[in-house]
Image 1: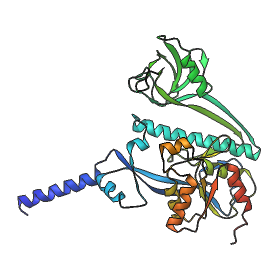
Image 2: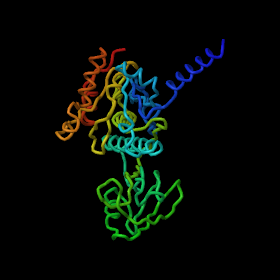
Image 3: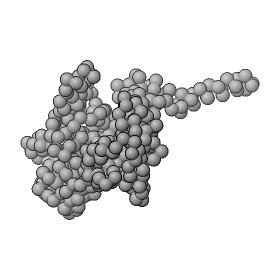
Image 4: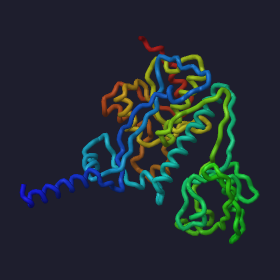
Length: 350
């Protein structure tokens, strides 16, 4: 091979490698998998002797490359997403991962609370502070607080809710510093901050952090949930059903393979999630027989922002028809809708 051919071949290989490996500031979303919940959830002394099973569904999200971007454009089972559709403006990868982890933790706590409450078991909730999710660059907290910090008090005011934290910060006199009690990586410390104008907010004053309540839950009997590799809030409904299934002697599944999606609120409401179409595709591929989808209400404000928006259930039902699945798509607004549907089922014939 002469030098010209060798150089040309090398150039082609470099271009192909760049197309295959060079990450773009975009993401590719596609169907994930089904995770059976019984191995992930353990209620002390709970009943796991069931003929059917309950599963949570996931979607797969990966950084796009020029090659995967081009391929995704020709596939119904792929969706191209801009970085702003995945991460918040200015949010780092670390902050994004922390937010997803916290969303999953909140989802689990709500699931435990609802399941134990519905089953008539002992359960209590309390807030130990607010967790910093991200810090606005150039704000008063920039360089002082970090994502993952737990704030337990502001000055003399303890922080037992998000509202209490916001009120305590708002009460700090202008141009005065305030002491925050902070737990960082399990070590207690104090941070002094003078609230100021938050960049990009039109002059609003504050610390310049986004935050969420950090809650702890106690139950009797004890329950443990292991989901280290999964993030986001969308498994709340299925966690609730699995915990209830273990707390009760009867088999909620009646022998069927049941999956679904939906965020769980403390009051038992099932909330809207993203990627329901891909979860339906994944559920069909995994042989799921019954799929619960949030039957969420679409407000006029939402329609003004996104004119073609549809409820999760409508999207799920349309996807099921499109792929020709025999899987039953069931709309649910609350945990009780899911329980009521399961109660109507006859035990599956062997």
